[in-house]
Image (cartoon, rainbow, N blue to C red):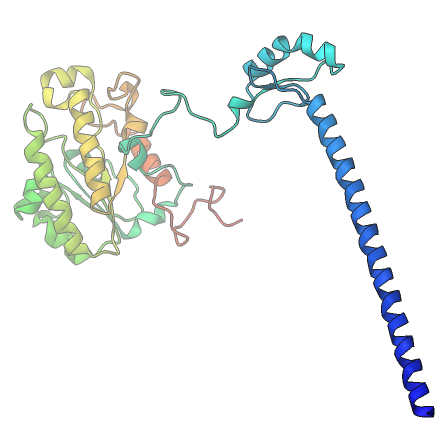
Length: 343
């Protein structure tokens, strides 16, 4: 009897406990539902008010944006302000700038409002790069015609550079290993002299004696390309080869030698620049220093014949240009006070 009573008593308590838990669960669920309904009502009411405040007109203008977006142009801003003045007054948002929704997105460039830089001599040429000391040329060689001969004739100081100047020579003489005459060493083969010297820099200026007549440019350029290949093979990849543009001449000289006219030389020099870039050489545009506004040799830098340079001003300007346009290297001997000189 005692056991039966205790069993029925425990069973009754369990039933009452389950009933109480069910009531509490139902209460919690009801509270959650009521809270959800309240939140939904608040959100719907807020969205309705926002839609009423932000009316979009038939022209696609939003009138409640207070500041124009960055991509909105001045013209659009002005149009938006004038077009929505009445609407802004009626809604109480006076001064609010309207934004045309169709203007959203990436900006489009207007045709002709930009330019593409051509890869020509103005881009290829070596820019000014500090100023090297004359000792920079101590392991350099200069290969050229009568203009280069002037370095020897006028005793121009080039820091001990090797001067391989030969009057009347062209690139064909170098390629064909023709015997040429040096004003200081006598007859020689230019390639053999350069190979023996193993110079680390080579400055080339050829063409003034070759391009005196019209129609000579194609042959000249063909030999010039072969010459560069041969010099690279002879001197190695560690030699910096500078290709110098053919300088302009005075107008009277161009009349006597039409192959040296400014337009002809510009065309040839443009092709020399491209050739230098293709063959890993440095192109030096001497016209930056020697040409006047009309593309002629500056009178103050010219010798009486209008083709060669004057001993003082002409060669002085040439050496200064070369010193200011050396290819950069941390090992260069820089002039104190120049851009890359150690302080």
